Structure formats: structure tokens, C-alpha cells
Image 1 (cartoon, helix red, strand yellow):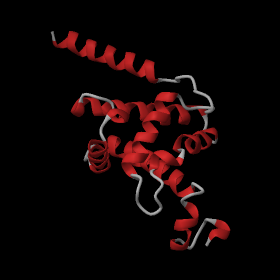
Image 2 (image 1 turned 180 degrees about the vertical axis):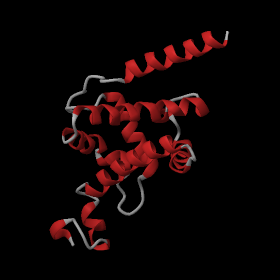
Image 3 (image 1 turned 60 degrees about the vertical axis):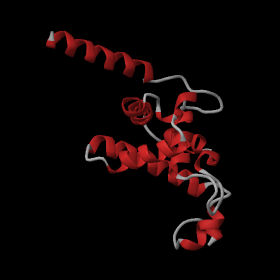
Length: 161
């Protein structure tokens, strides 16, 4: 029975990974699928909710377009792993909430993101921190955000300092 359970679990993981692996991109993206962009927007909004200063929320920062350009600079296997990690985190929320991350209400998404960023599970924390970094970089580089935050930084942002 234990062998059958292990085999069934392994088959389930393999089928899930196969469904996530190399989804075709959705226009206007060169690399990202609609599912991946939906996850990125949810992650961005959980990390950077609208209404602060500047008021642009993470979901409005077009994080997918930014990450699509970043993915263009990666080799194939790196792109595949970044994309696979988005699917893994999105679906990891099913274990605790019964729905993927992108379907969580704002407060639950923010709490889930905090949990991922501080979990003692190294691989999970590393993936969450990496994707969080991409989201924050995209938001900071957005034309509505960069001029507002440029005075706080002494490097980058070119002439906006």
C-alpha cells in the first residue's frame, strides 16, 4: 500500500509539472503564459498594494512585461525554472487555502506571501524571495513610480535623481 501511495503521489507530481512546463506564451508576451501573468499580478498586488505613495499598486505596474524582458536575457533552462517556480507557488496556496494564490482575497494573499518569505523551508523561501525581487524591481522601474522614488536612492534612475 505504501508503494502504491508513493507511486500515485509521484505520478501526480509528474503530471502537474508536465502541465506547468513550457506553457505557450500568451500575446503580447514572448515567454509568459496567461496563467503566469495572472500569478505575477496577484503576487505584485500582495507585495505592493495600490493606494500608497506612489499610488500605483503592483498589479498596475505591468510586472509581466518587465519579467518577460528579463526572461529574454536568460538561457532556456533558466527561463523554464523561473516559469515553473511561478506555477509551483501559485498552486502551493491550494494546500492551505484550497485555491491557487492568484484567487486569494487580498488579505489572505498578503499573509501567504509573508509566510513564504519567512518560511524555514529554504527552497520555498528562496523561490518566493526571488519572485518577490522581480516584482519589486518591476514596480520600481515603472514610469509612474521611478520619478517618485528616485530622490531616495543615490544610484540608478539616471537623470531622475
